[in-house]
Picture (cartoon, helix red, strand yellow):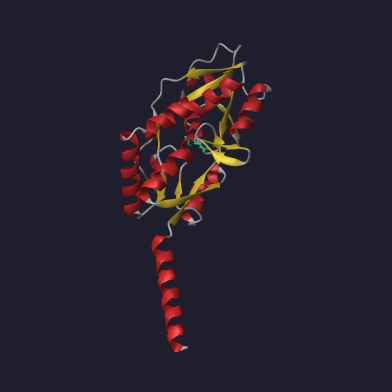
Length: 241
Ligand code: ARG
């Protein structure tokens, strides 16, 4: 009896040991899924360029990826509170955000653009927005840029779709947003157009809690690999061509 018990104990121990040894760690990833084509909902599933990119990174660094959908301005607090481990959300590297988080290497460059109704011809630059009602999304880099221009009548929205609806219904004259999601909206609304701006590019990167140098290092290595093995280009092709 004791022999059998001893054997059982051994088997149980080996089983537990192997499970803990081979079970992948989970990386909880925060995003805000209203930023197509980077992240958006399709039949309630979070999909998009960023989501596929982070899953590929997960494969390389051997982590299970679980994505959580959070409001954009809730992402940094969720990271700080350890509710998530990293953020991928088309998030621009800014000096201000760098005070709170570390960023991976950049994986995409973008610019802000102005979205207008097709028949509006007197707005061609940020300065033309003075005295105009301009929509932005609360806390997005577009919000920061517009806030620097004196005399702009800024209206903050909580979601991109909210801003587009306001523009279409004439509540605002213009809407400032990142280029790729803007192009996506233009495709769907034939009476809207984009004005490109002569301003600096922004870089999107993955945000990681501070003092996690090893994770930053692994993610950067994985990004390099995906750029050199063609996977990154395939994703670009799938979502931006
Ligand atoms: N690039 C802009 C920023 O960092 C907007 C990002 C919005 N992303 C999103 N998933 N909703 O502020």
